[in-house]
Length: 240
Length: 392
Ligand code: HEM
Ligand code: SF4
Ligand code: SF4
Image 1 (cartoon, helix red, strand yellow):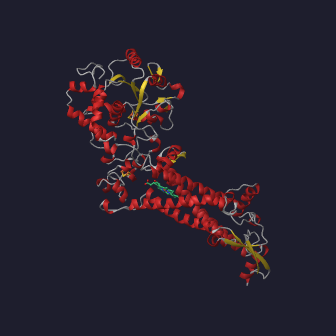
Image 2: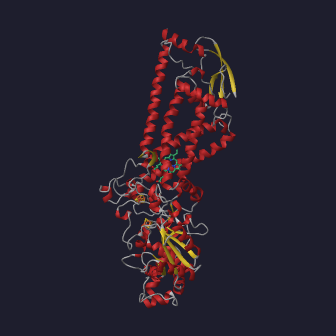
Image 3: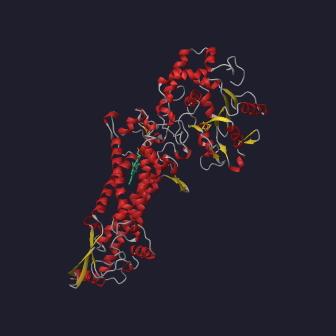
């Protein structure tokens, strides 16, 4: 999993050992960027469906704006679902950074570390915060939350989609969602409100990832492209 | 209807004989049956069979309970300006008990109801409008000193089939809206041991009831129902999927205000709160008031009255999404969502600034600065190296 390299420290000429750890295998990386694209498309088209922010003029027969937006939304939805299915498989087939148990804090140490990392973000004793190769507990919780959000949006989305053909395949598969949430309007509201959670998550996710790279030089961004990180061999990583 | 009329449908005659006596021509009767076959979705080829079956029908007994309700349904169903044979049929069936229409009152009619239910035990059709209050032992509705729950339970026992007419009987309607002080429920929450046919709507279209009753008289069974007990022939498709303004929806042409250009051009009412995308009803096809028009046809958004809990989930009627409760005041979802998203962006920005300040203080050798470790270089060297570079 890791390759040791001895390179001179750039700062002082002291030798520091580095190792390359491989974190994200190619299927996961591809899934990540597909989700980025499809969720972006879903948000843009979803907001048009929610509040048609421009209109067409003239004869209705000459235009197809909303229909195209909805079409794009549903195609992106299909892509998201397909990715979600592979991701579920990957929860079991992936490596230890990608597996299901890397998606929730599950040891007492994790919970203690969660607190230390929160303190790090509050500028309190940042040096004491533990290091993680893959997800730290805050990441685990927030990514799992967004997975749950995606699942609820998929369920409510397909339920709304199925209403055009009651008794059809999709309706039989997703009709129960309406009963559980209390009707189509509630499903729509949920679907709509949950879109805001993406708009809350995305800036924080971008910022913290960027910050990890700029401030702590953790090379997180390139790990989602190239799959791995170089880390100092003498540092302790909780999930090594 | 309740009182003696020269045309009373006597128990000895069939519907065919009776319509003859009333002067309804065979042609009229057949064309009406053809229409109904289409409405019921069995196809006009079925007409001869329906004609034959209906002509043989003998007068059915009907008990109509009015529980917690506004009588709007009864008005909608029975008072049409231009009675069709369907209305006649509803007139004709022996309404052994019907609060609004019966001439008598008090003990006499209660006794008449008891007799009718006894004589026709297992055979009468039970029609119910109105909900049943359950709170405080059901005291919010009593008829002849008995609670609605009691009255309904008794009437249901000997009924051959049960039809719940209107949103009240379907799920409770306005009195079941938050906070539902009387604990009102629809009758299918009370009668659990057999199907209740729900004719949804507030009020429903009279033709749907007629067609359901005719289906029952023709086939001896109720029509196919959806998951909520609504007849599929009427409630099997969404307003949004049958709407003449759907082309404008797909094109992206929306009414913004009720008196704007789009409203004059009959554009889609989505943005002024149309609930057509969430509502199953035959309004666009059957229409209202002797087929004159229907809400969207007249430029008003659908309010979703055939769906459960529509007073809570379809309101505000002129906005697309329901309000969120829980902040003391009701605030729309977008205000909250946008505030949180902006808050996240602003928080991130503030945090980035704070990070920058700490870094520059540490670089300047401020002893109070918080040291943010750089993991790719040895921790003890982190700042020194930075400082050396900047010193150098
Ligand atoms: C990240 C995922 C998603 C986001 C952010 C998203 C966003 C949105 C938004 C904002 C709306 C407008 C809601 C309104 O105000 O009425 C919407 C509508 C809708 N979405 Fe999604 N959506 C997502 C996933 C899905 C999925 C997986 C489906 C599955 C088919 C779906 C199907 C729908 C449908 C059917 C509508 C209503 C469109 C209509 O009936 O006109 N969405 N979506
Ligand atoms: S369903 Fe509506 S119209 Fe019918 S009785 Fe109830 S409140 Fe009145
Ligand atoms: S008016 Fe209502 S039902 Fe008709 S297309 Fe527009 S949103 Fe759909």
